[in-house]
Amino acid sequence: MKLIRKIAGWLLRGVVTIFVVAILAILATSLSPIYRFSEAQPFEGEDIYNPYSDYDTTQMWRRANMHTHTRVEGIFNECRHTPEEVIAEFKRYGYDIVTFSNHNEITTIGAAEECGVRAYEHGYNILKSHTLVYGSEKVLRYDMLMPILVSQRQFMLDLLSRDADIVQMNHPLRTTATTDNHMRKLSGYQLVELDSGRSTENEYWDVALSAGHYVLGVANDDMHYPDRSNRIAVRCNFLAMDALERDALYEALRSGCFYAMRVPDYGRGDWAQKEERNAKLPYVKNIGLRNSDIYITLSERADSIKFTGAHHRTLYCATQSAEATMTLPSDEPYARITAYFPSGEVIYSQPFARYDSSAMSMPGSAAEHSLNIPVTLLFNLLVLTLIVAVVVAYIKFLRR
Image (tube, rainbow, N blue to C red; front, top):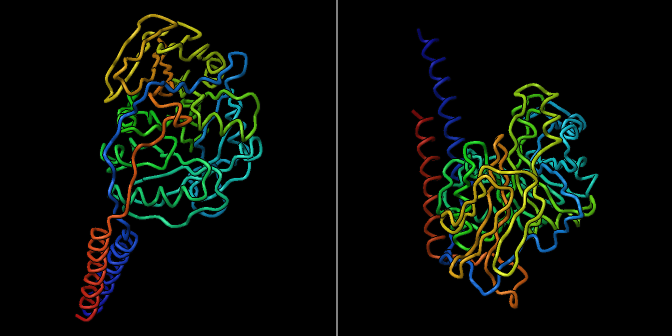
């Protein structure tokens, strides 16, 4: 009986120790500056930014997936397929660019070889607040385990932006505890991932755009399983690039001269049909701006072509057509286009936004954040107090 009690006591201590270590790790990585965020300022100005102003209809749309996982060295793998195997699969479906974004590891083939682009996905945290970092020479190993506060997420974006060429917010729709408040206030990222499978509406994108953050939308497979037909070649981007080079890729991603797309899982496991249908996707033939008129021409008829404005309002919708034009009202900050096709394909344009061309080359983020010193001191003092309290309670438990 004494042996059983002793074993039970050891087990209890072990469980409590694991729990305490987890709580301490969360608290220790919760230390953070607290910021004052400026008020939202919608896009304004006499001019309209045209992300496709440099688009030449004679050049190619290059198909790209910017969020791809592969097998890596070590025991922590989210994909069992090698980079070479993954590239081969994507090439079957007409992809020109495959950017590997393994968790906290820079993979140096794929787009790294083809275009000179290196990327990795940052984030260990419980909430799956992940960021895709382009161009960094090394991985940032630090992360907050429970970044709930908007200031905590802003702090991480600031850290990641220091030596990155481009920063992308990954799958906000699937990130636990991401709110409209986060999307209104966060800045320091240039791309946001769209259409994570549950919605084609992307309301959170409009929350950011309505607050004056000119962020561009990308659609990616977030590919872990190239052997599952519903997990590969179902999200992609088409970039206007005259050459497969890093500068051309970055220019397209920074300026917005690309569109994102949802693609059905053709054949639902019939790989031959999937490959055949992916070679015949509808596409954008022409898109741009004439005075205040935003226009788009598609390769085939869409069920509907919707123009969405601030606060996710529908400004105009054309039905059963391969083209549409809308005049952006003088009091409307921006408009973006979504085209829905009969077979389930969806095309997302980048936003046409108001700005002052004499003061800036393109719309930017109007938001700023500054350190709130008193609240920062109080918040971190509270966290440190909780750490001490947990340690004291644990010591008392061990002495029982």
